Amino acid sequence: MPSLRLVTGAALGLVAGLAIPHARKAMMQAPSALAGDWLDALVAEHRLVQAAFEKLLATGEDQAHQREMLLSKIAYALTKHGVEEENVVYPALSETSHAAEARHLTEDHAAIKTFIYDLRRMPAGDPSWLVRAREFSDHVDTHIREEEEEIFPVFRDALSVEENAKLTRMLNWEGFKVA
Ligand SMILES: [Fe+2]
Ligand SMILES: [Fe+2]
Image (tube, rainbow, N blue to C red; front, side, top):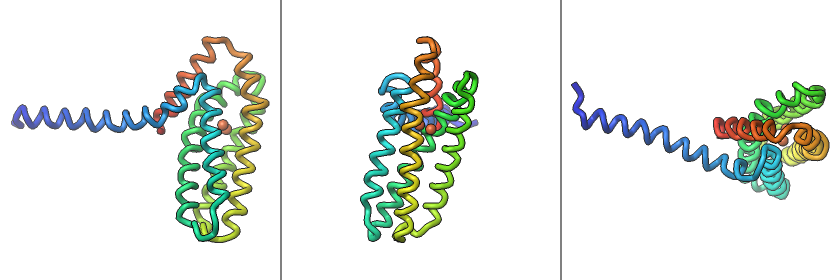
C-alpha cells in the first residue's frame, strides 16, 4: 500500500497541477472580465488585436521572426475572441431578428482562419507576406467596425439588464476555457 505521505504528495501535486493553469487562465481573461459588460470586453479585445496589427504592419522584410511572433499573438487573441463570440454572442444574435448578421459575422471568422493559415505557410520575409497581412488587417478592421458600430450596440440595447449580465458571464466563461 502506498504510504500516506506519497498519497498526500500526489494529491497536492494534482491540486497544484490544476490550480496553476487555472490561475494562468484567470490572469489571461482578467483584462476582458474587468473591462465591463460583454460588449466592453469584446471592444477591449478588438483594441489589443488592432495594436498588434499596427506593430506587425510596421515590420520590415528582415524581421521575419518578429512577424511570426506577432502573427502568433494575433492568432491566439482572435481564437479566444472567436470562441467567445461564436459560442455566446452569435447564437444569442441568431435567436433574434439579427440571424442574417450572425451568419455574416461567422463567415468573416472563417475568412480570418484562412488568412492565418495562408500567412503561416508563406515565408515571413517575403514582400507578398506583408501584402497579405495588410489584407488580413483590413478584413479584421471592417469586421470590428460592423460589430462595434452597427450590430452589437443595437443588440445590447434590445436586451434586458439580466440578459446582458448573463451574456457577460457566459462570454467570460468561454474565454476562460480557452485562455
Ligand atoms: Fe467577430
Ligand atoms: Fe469581435
